[in-house]
Length: 334
Length: 218
Image (cartoon, rainbow over all chains, first blue to last red; front, side):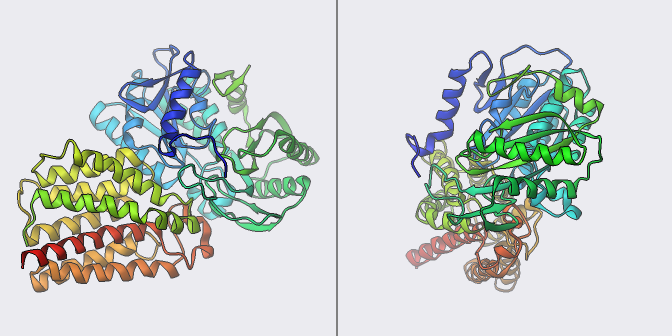
């Protein structure tokens, strides 16, 4: 695959350099560690720090979500790989204001180990209180009986948003985590993959898929999904994704939801809106009310083709968090 | 057998070279059941280690310190899941070498057993999960028992690496239960686990290193 690159080995460092140069009014790199980015804005003194992170290659995830209404800092890993404990710890130290720090990340083996080690170090060496909430929204990644094993995908956006808002409402660490966990418990995603991405260092496609094939439940690092089959129409795909979500998390008539149709990197907005059109119809047919909707590339996988649908069930508290304004380099909501 | 801090550094240099040679093969294995970057990840980590070996560690004579720096450097550069796993292995190994300038048969046995157990603990995996543990557990068991029987590290290590190889090969027929590839279920059968393979290479590299050294001495 063709890519605009210099030395592939330096791709993450060069991206970060460009990113902080482009948005000096939002974000800065910590001198202690280049992989540690924090907000430049002043926040309230008693505010819980919100730390997000994960591998790079998911842009706008995760560095695009540092700013007002979302996170205070991000630890950036190599492509599709968890950051090591060092940058996580540096961000933790920089954003703690005495009220503790909430770690928000997807439930992947590597992230669990590295964020876990960083949390231990923050506690032992720095006496900073850290609690974590993990995203497990991907329905396809494990059956319902093993829900705790599920990975986080696009639904992470809603979890960051809920926790980011809660911290700005002045909630303490325990309550920020409670809101994050509630957001996660109320959120489900299902994805479909159409074409692979390739890593800058290898140039090889991350998985194989026939010209006329799609894969339901494909993970956002190209982890194989639950079913490979012939490519279907946008309406059929939307029906399948919504069906799997609602079977996993039944939603009653009259309930309100937030919906996200997320592109994986190379799927045009045109197609994403075709998907949203049918998703909205399906929810309306069941009397489910879309309170707020998001359509676009929010958490991608380099140039992977395909999309995911995420639904978050809302109560009054989550509605407040979803309405809260956001001002980040890659995400603005007024 | 007697190894010095210099030997230990020579061995880590050999890993750096081995990883560059096997990089593509490890990526190839990973593409079948993961995201295809295991070779790249190993290379990022060992290149960072190489930086330390040719700078900060050039005059370092404490084997424990060397192994500790190798673990910490690899972790910093890599993150991911292999970062904490290998780092824990080399750091736990380092602990067994504390205050030792030359390493004898029993020190080397303790080092490698601690390495294997550290990784197993960090990853919370069991034999049969299709992970590094499928290579490491038979290796550590065999090293412990063979060394107790023979009191000869080289002989024990040869047998242990042979069992490690069988463990690595056993991952082909296993269904993955840990990490990203666990999502594949039945579809993971037939592919050899990349982590089980890279850790086998690390052990096999140590074996050829000590065999060659022995040949030179005698």
